[in-house]
Image (tube, chains in turn cyan, orange):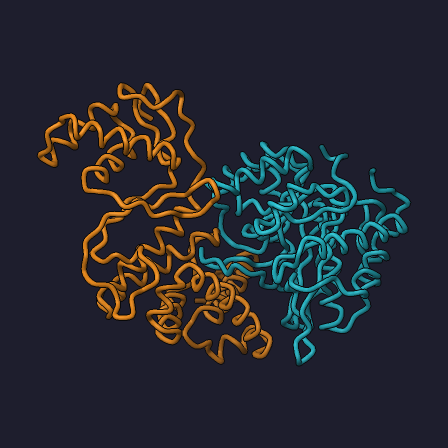
Length: 280
Length: 259
């Protein structure tokens, strides 16, 4: 299954799924789903996932088991997740390197971990535990953050790399998040990518973001991919080679044709940067 | 207590635990405290997080309780959400279960509020929401038959309402009291549909949902409980009701043994 996940993928969203499944556009090579949206859920959701699997490999990206948490995992959820991932035959499972809950209450958003050695140790341990529980490679995703970090901590990229190395984990490289953080905190996004251990990158996310009136960039997944993010994607692909790239669009979801035009743009970059050609 | 009694790892955990608690309070308290905002480092940016976290949840429950919200008014509905969040935030990892958490918190106060049909409306809306997001269907081992245990879709709930809040739009003068029983189920298009039932049909659906007795036995028990004779008229209505329930996807089939 792993070798089948390549090229450009799209998130399997309920509001686009019917048209996507009818048209089966050739530009879409695989789909990504959030397990939380499918576990113990019937009706059309279950049908959509079954139909998508007929044509596309599926990759999973979790939203709620972030690696920045104290306490034990929810065993019931892990069991449900393990069953779903086994059924879907996913090559890896990814989650965010951030805080998603505190004291058994969920934020339903991605809050920043402090970039400290202590947080590295905590996240690395949780990644190892999750890998053991799921018996699958685990990829962490670098997230956007908006609150400045304490001056005595690590740089973000050093924090991410340290977690990767200590946990022996894979990376879901989100180039939009790197770009957003670079613009919000004033660093060179290419320098961030230069420090990434490329052999750990299994997947890339690309998306658009919101620029507020005060200039702060927010990772909304609700805008088209801007040219600067396309350029950063090309830079990343030239370094890491032909890893699968997902176009994320979760809000202000446009007509499918508009998304497919972005998929075409991503394919052009993918082919140029990696030399790999799209099928068909 | 002296710091010397803690190991370094324990101290680190305590620092992180304190940060997590501060984040939780900043995001969910009625008003974030200056102390917490200062501890987290940037008041302006942590207020951004507060807004992001709350906006997503507020939008979600606004969709789930659209009609309840319109009756209560934005301000009163928002106050209820704020009060609910101030208890610590959602306990579920599933976005789809969040409206149910709000409902459990809010229904005692909505029962005491005007109009008198408000709590029925909220109950009806959360039932529709729950039905749409219910688990996958159970798999029957055979067709529906009177000597088998009936297999009912898990996306079915029977509601006993004092007001006909399933009728839309809301009348200009509000709903008049009119007890009714509605079976809410998920159809093949993933929509929740109300199906008005009489008391015997409702009892049958509820008995079949328990999935512990063959159909014949449940029919005799329900008829006895409703002091109703099983004659030709009853059988004719029962047959029509079963055919309708099968057609709607409420009844899925049968199985030989209880689950």
